[in-house]
Length: 259
Length: 320
View 1 (cartoon, rainbow over the protein chains, first blue to last red):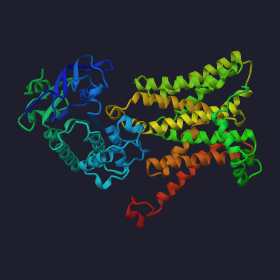
View 2: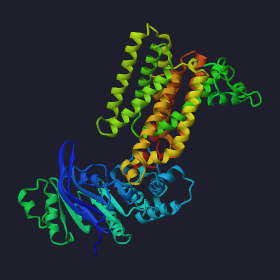
View 3: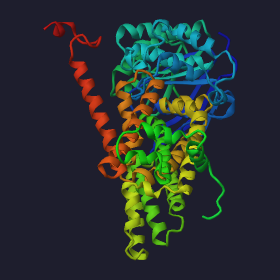
View 4: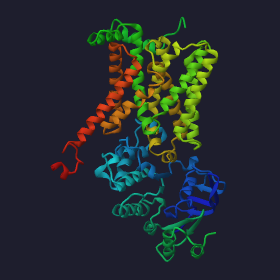
């Protein structure tokens, strides 16, 4: 795969959260068409990294560029979609159908205020629902879906925005095994067939296999695996994720180096 | 206030009361009770009726979103703040108490929103601080400078239909109109933000602005509700109908419609009962709203216990 300019470029990034340094000296490049898995134990800075990429957190030092500009700037608006658990865990009193949820993704700020403007919105909604395979339950209330279906509905909302990059924050939490495999197949397809760039945070080491690249957060550092993860380094990846204590000797053994 | 220009509310009142249409008097003719028909005949009560129905519609719509955003008690907090503002106004010789209340309320709503937004304080903590702070300030000022004015102030605590003069009807109507119009424009972005604010932001929605607009509108609505149903009872019309609707509705649109149904029933029945039984109108409206919730909740509970009534009931148990 020939790689041009990275879509997301992070260099020497240090981020503080609540007075503590959560990420330190992180370097990471994400190119178009990548399926990047971000893993690591709780509190290792995975979510912080995502929040910085979408501009919700300010870096203390270092540089983050998204589409060549600062995160949250106009250039990246609408080109990145955030797919998080928040949307899957809707307030129980909200009764909204899958189609309505997905439709919210298609609307720009102007469209939302002037919904009578004719656009290709309806087509995009149906296309997104079809891609995630929820045609049969499109009119069903999101609350009535299973965990896996709900996650797919949220992904459809992200797809409907027409964004090139989908950032997925723990999409596999609370999803049973069968739907997990199906969900991963879906993401794989999105990456290969639809040409989407995916960045996924997950605890699921099996899910990392699907990714084209994998990065591990350990104690505020991100180790980025340049090779395909399905090859040798994967073993270390798994042991790192499985072993919550992360003994120092294992960390130094990681073949992809780090800083 | 002599020589005022006719406001939106007065205009509405005139249209409804115009001899050519005689809308109010026609409806009044159908109304039961000995005292209640006065709401369709006497100027003062007509104003109160129009104001109450308008504010019910607006409160129901905003209440649905408040409930979804887990801010059910912000109405209560802002009502206390506005009561503090009224107290300050009354203490200084009633210099436009509603203006002072509006200012205090909008200011507090913005502060509460910003404190929440910057993760400095959680929602209910900041509401608690503003609620008690502003209320205490108002009461202290009232005691220091008010020389024992208490009669006026009671109307704002429990609501008083007598408080609704032409100027206030105009204010309530104008606020309702702005609230309805802006909600029509912003309800989709608001829904998107409620579901996932980060995703909404990535989509290009000005999350901060929409949140701020919502806070300011809720503050203005609450100030107007305080005159009608009282500072202590604002939440009854803001949240209870929305909560009742949530028990029976199956879609988002449905929940908005049900909210209107329950809200307007509460107001109408509340005004009727308070007129006939000679009780406070605000408290009766709140009571009816709560009773509606209890009844619907109970019916739903009974319905869910009935075998084969709902799809998800386990077949083994249903067969007995």
